[in-house]
Image (cartoon, rainbow, N blue to C red; front, side, top):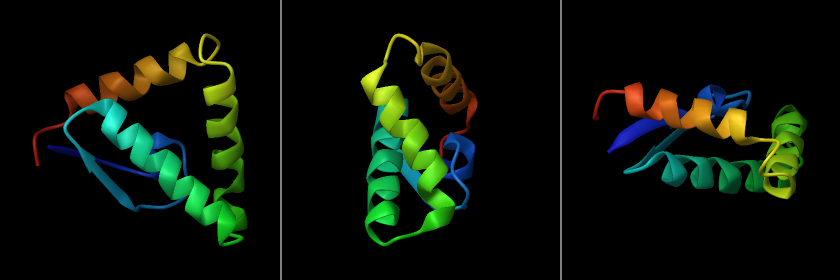
Length: 78
């Protein structure tokens, strides 16, 4: 199990997401950003817009995805 923060994934806060894989924490970040958007949290809106764009254009976003996976892989187990 590893932990990445919202900030490490491009967001504005230090909420921690834990998962067995990079995809686990990326999906947790997506849920976190959706919840923040619903709550009207303007600080998270740019990160939410970026995440929506990544889901719509996965080939263009491969660089971000690979960087997030590498960062996750380099983290120690927690």
